[in-house]
Length: 246
Ligand SMILES: *[C@@H]1O[C@H](CO)[C@@H](O)[C@H](O)[C@H]1NC(C)=O
Ligand SMILES: *[C@@H]1O[C@H](CO)[C@@H](O)[C@H](O)[C@H]1NC(C)=O
Ligand SMILES: *[C@@H]1O[C@H](CO)[C@@H](O)[C@H](O)[C@H]1NC(C)=O
Image (cartoon, rainbow, N blue to C red; front, side, top):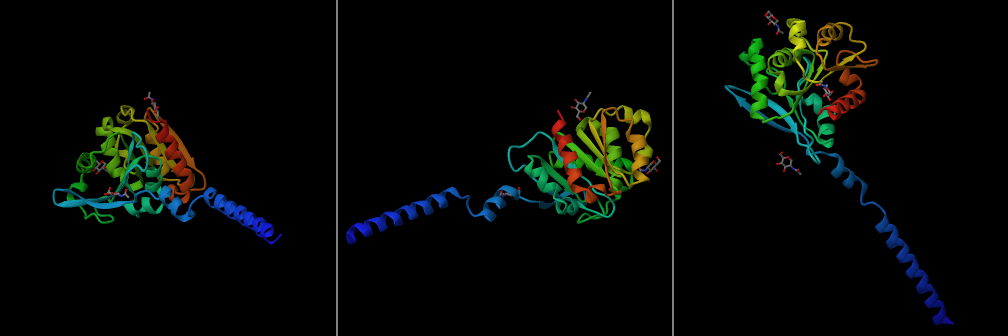
């Protein structure tokens, strides 16, 4: 009877152990570690890009998984720099979605020193041109908020053949170009602005409307820096646009 009892107990114990083992094997691994591996792209690399005397700094993320065709170049507004796109999670998101993304510190912002080339329209267009060349960016989608229009618009007007897409976010300098100049730009464009931005958004929209292949996204309840006020909506619109590009 005693042996029968312990055999019964041993069997129970065995079953219990087997159950624990199954439970263990069936459970996902330590949650923090796995999700970190999946979620954190190889974050931003800060490096100096030397052109002439003054280096231009930038942050870059590489596609985390299978790379997509488009590469995204992010400029910034007056109160910001490349770090803004890291803080907002835009760089990391683009990497997770398979895009190479680069955020620049424009001359005089972030780590980049002021550059005298930046004082002319031609100099600013040339600067972007050099950035694309030195970073060997291809199929570039240029994201240009506010003040960065000083760089993006002269580049767009002259060099739109090199752009795969354009995402102006209430940029400055649109007044410097004519309806005819905009009309000649075939680049697919996503015009983004904040509903509460009454001045620059409206002014730039009047001009950007002449771009033949554009769509418009108005972010509700957002001001001039609408991507900061409504990052989720901004990110969704940007990803949808990138996904639609040929
Ligand atoms: C992160 O990126 C750097 C530079 O692009 C590269 O040298 C490094 O191997 C990457 N690390 C991982 C874990 O992917
Ligand atoms: C706009 O055009 C004027 C006159 O050509 C020029 O002086 C000015 O620098 C331009 N502004 C920008 C922001 O490109
Ligand atoms: C317009 O842009 C979309 C992407 O937003 C693209 O798929 C389409 O081919 C473009 N149309 C023309 C006529 O270039």
